[in-house]
Length: 200
Image (cartoon, rainbow, N blue to C red):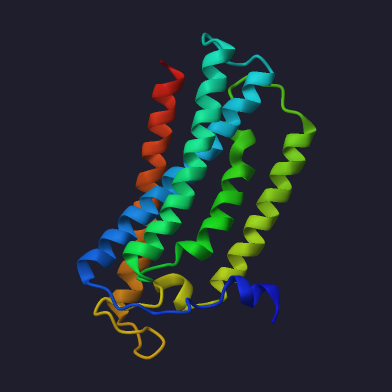
């Protein structure tokens, strides 16, 4: 079995959950994934700026605390979002277990662009960002090739296994858009929180 099939295999157990708990897991889980990716990216950019003395009016200690704290918070949120998708959403909606790795790598790829203005960017950071971005795109392509299972998950709104009963057109439209909106909202909230911490 190829490693891509191991990474992207369907869940071993399909659990038909309640609609309300499925929606709760979908929205909260993807808010956490978006929050984690945004926090990790912005915090890593802040840590890059510390080394170059580009913290502005803030002390390096504040920048380091905010940077390391935000990075840790982002990683925990990414893991927590994946766990919420497994435990609460029960397979409903786009599976965060597949999408979290490329999203996390994409966040690291954007870290140098979140550095403070005036930070002297080391070529090493740009090389690492390029590698992370390339891996992120490659993983995203592998996930996207799963088709409907990647966009809409394995469980329909009515709890039926998506491999046995086709998604309705409204399911295929609403479920991915809801996950995307939740992730964007979580990312915006993380950016706001880190800005408040940096300005404290």
